[in-house]
Length: 252
Length: 252
Image 1 (cartoon, rainbow over the protein chains, first blue to last red):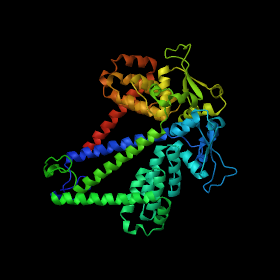
Image 2 (tube, rainbow over the protein chains, first blue to last red):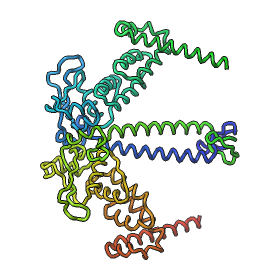
Image 3 (cartoon, rainbow over the protein chains, first blue to last red):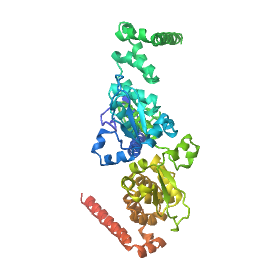
């Protein structure tokens, strides 16, 4: 028999679908692809040009950004904890900030200092991370590396921008390996990133024999021993579950 | 043989794919579905709450709308062409309007009357259509019937909101039938809606024998005979193409 899809011959032992189901599946795929095109067009329509986007200078729209900005964000400290003497403000629009973050909304809709002065100070963040944060609020896009994903996750947690937090978590999970699993586990705990906690934890549990030899392990025992306890508890609980499962399979 | 998908028996004559291709196709479908979920989440993130949305009153965010509105749109005439003595203003935000429409952008970034006064007059539109228009600019969503789709298509053309124009065209094409094909054809021509022109034209050409008996046909001949000429030209050109095609098939 010949496969309708790959055109190769196959024996009836390796048969997949009947022709009717193949045709239905092809139609479904076409429909899904059309839906994706529609959604992409919607995303492009809803996306704002970002006033702080470096690419933005290439755009004709660039000239309009200062006009519609009615608030600036300022990185009030650099990452080393020192005050930046003349921080570069990142221009933004109140309506955009308020629509993306309930924290900004509360800040801007009440007559708080930030609302009256038109300046929002963001502490413990680099200028680059702040600019990337504002760009994400405008466009739902960010150019991530691991450091930037961590910085943005912290901001997303602080300003309750769930979509960005999920985006950073997914990126960090995709970059997980045995080397970085322990720092990621600690970081995720600190910022309440549950999916990253689970992914890092499961990687750590696969390498329990090597765990206690790691430098980061010793540091974590000193700094936050409860997190280490959680690793052992999770490991034990998995062992018990596996034993119970094996037992019930053996009995069945 | 048994189909992996529908579990029904089938003969080798009705074979579709081999098992490998079936599995690949299933994976592709899963991937496409995940992409759709991601895009939907992105759309929801980028969507603004709409200050003029009636549902909006149910939202907690409703209270913030007047705060972040810095411009109002006013339907300066109702549809019957009479001046409305006290039109209800639709509040909006300059940055949103400017990001969605190059016409609003030009209006608001220069010191034009609308920008200085903070009031944009929109002529020949009902309050309901204006409200739906602004809601669309915020959310990329509209609740359409045929009348609303026409009203919004006119606004989309006037303010160069391509995404909305495509949306309305698709809706009107989905509602096309022999009864409304001629008025839609004329309307589409008036507002430069090419896809709607093509769809209406192809429906009209399928019913050429009945065309000249229609009341709308006689009206169109009086009002804009060039559009009627275009119908006949398209019909003739199709007939010639069909004849050439038949000829080449017969020779082959």
